[in-house]
Length: 293
Image (cartoon, rainbow, N blue to C red; front, side):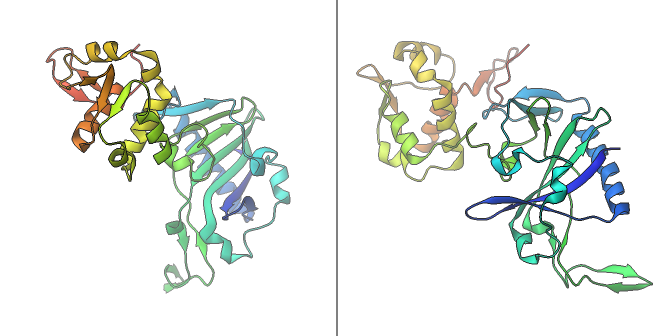
């Protein structure tokens, strides 16, 4: 069982983030320590750690890792001993809708400090009048808001190694700042990419204005990859052969189309998200950037 188990809520306001202790009765604290230990073991059981890559979606037995991860200021100096000094969430019902994550501080059997995270959403706040439970053969309700915990961890921080393990960028970014490691391209980012010396955009205004999330992500990946800086126009044209994509060259620049279908195809190609099957030679789409061993 995890030792010195303490439960804390991550409360995010518009201007700041703070931790609020969740006071527990001893029996509940012991039960949760056992349950979260099981979640901890399940999270790590048989997994393959993949260095965080925004272009890759982890498979079932894979999780991302970030080495040397610096915890945010509101979290960096906390451990299973210090969090007992935090203000309690129990007497302030108004903060419940601002809870973005639940954190368990504890120590494993080797005395290593662990920080275990669960994502938390508003749907996990049980409001009075919406929850019924049986007591002495009669259903009754709750007179104060209650919190419903998940059954699965979203992230683990190993303090000694300063290592963050997590299952999903989108889930974890709601309570831990991961923007420095990955951002979707802004309109200005897209305009800058389209202005690259390798590209000749047909209609940069149409492409850069109100792109969908998929397109923003692929532009961010393209900027991150450095493909346009590394390969010449001729090399890009040559390597497009066999990928069912028409690369047009104007004044030694790759024409960047404005039609959405063609934009998608070109971004997939430039981000190396198209491949042919080794046996059937069928052209496939993939978002996996994991290198083959």
